[in-house]
Image (cartoon, rainbow, N blue to C red; front, top):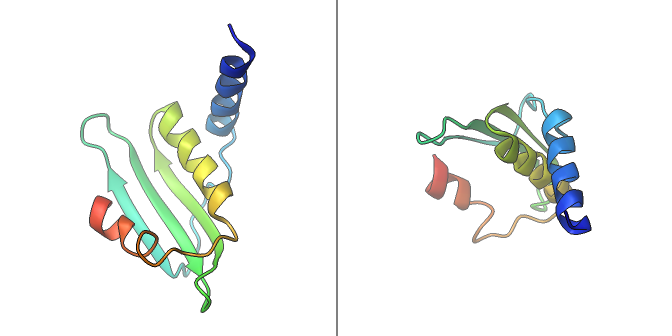
Length: 98
């Protein structure tokens, strides 16, 4: 197995076993719940966005396969501190999932 593939598997397994930001944000400014009816993944994402459209906190709760849980965990670590893009960030959850 190549080093890249092994590293990818280790990252996925680590984020699945110990997901980052796996909790509900009480009083979140935004939240979105999505279910994939084909596989049963069920995830809710919570955001706290400040007045400057910066994501101050992001978390999730739910259940799903290892890839689903790990990718959501990775997404939350990436989004923290980022500025919400007005076209994608505000509307994508509402339009695509909810």
